[in-house]
Image (cartoon, rainbow over all chains, first blue to last red; front, side, top):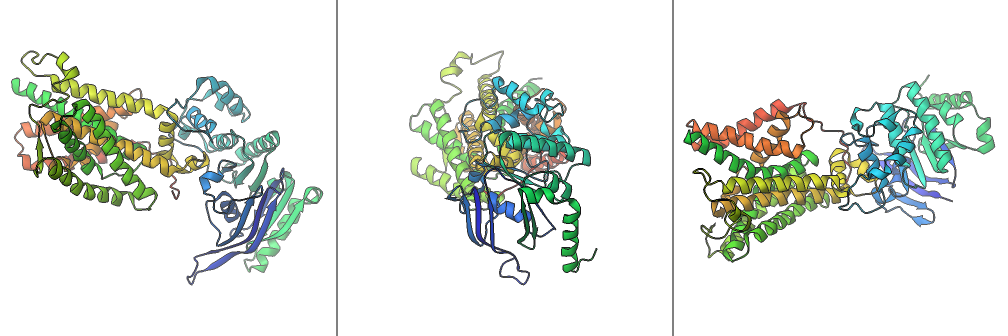
Length: 260
Length: 307
């Protein structure tokens, strides 16, 4: 087992009248090599689960085990040495004020000392160009352009490449296509699939796009109010289609009194 | 004519000396986006420690280097208060400044016979020993040693910072001010980077204090009043006036900004503005520069994370 969340309890606005309990003895585990699509309505706990895994949020109680190590108390930046993450907002995954080259040079040095040697090593440029070529956006010819001047789709593609520049064990995709236009989303998903398969990385992808959830990955989970209500693997996942998921979604919504 | 040349000389002298401090504020304010008020205390700390060291027979160039270290230590305290104790940036600066008010006085009282001002006229300074001796004392009727040495010091600081910002540590500092989440993703603590930046920034402020004290031959607590405003105004004036000049390094713009800001103050005083209005004018000019610079600076996307 690669990753295990055990007996997680998490409430928001604790000890106030607005207290809402999200996770109650929540368990979740990930096998090495899985590409998991996570779907669920707003407030179902998808993003909170990712935050707990990455360490940007802490649980009230429970344990997080990564490859037999208890990482519950490990800080977010230390977990980042083996977990890569791409956020919904394309501006989070890169530095706008630095050039593509500078962004990549920093990422290239991840898990090593940031000392007083020069950050940019011109000899690595060809390697960076190769990495950028797989985005198919012409970024390889714009190494000295400030990242802030790129489009959202380009920045997100760059963020994905950068997150995978050094060997990571787990890739977290937090609705990483949600802020992009349909065409950019398609390109982004193809790139994601290529990178995940090419590097054989265990991946958890949260998405609101049911088609992506069905088309990509080898496991699908649906979350609702802090619980996993559907967990389909391999063959069972292959049989599911978008309409099945939609039906499921509607029935949940009606239960909640949201109506359709 | 003489009057004008004299004003020009003084402007350049002061412009270059205060530029060193402005370079320090450029690091904290522009690169790290940290409004650091401790400079009002670290600048006189550099001045006072330099004066005391020189009075006790230390080589002025060594005193210059040591003052940087003392300033850096004070800057680290500001950083630790913010990063480890989660105190707001403005408050951290005020706290360190307040503590330094006492520390500076204690240093003076302890090592300077209970006097609150340290004078070292006619003793060795960077302006009359070593390198300075190579410059003739009189060039065309003017003593240009101070302006030349101050220029060299400012230039050295500029190149040192330019170089540092190209290193891994320096680029990480830029990333910290730009997008803290990116630094977290690089598996680095943004907090450590902030402490480094504040140490370097305040090191430069103290170094400026050291240079200014050596040019005047005295040092006291009073020197620090209004330094944050002066330094920040130089940074903002420089970056906004030369915002269109893309080939020019920010550090160069900051030095030019410092000279420009000093020039305006000198002209105002030369035209007969009473000195008691000087700080008022400084504040007003600062506001004008700030308003004019709106939208000209590329502040990047900033995502603060818990340190």
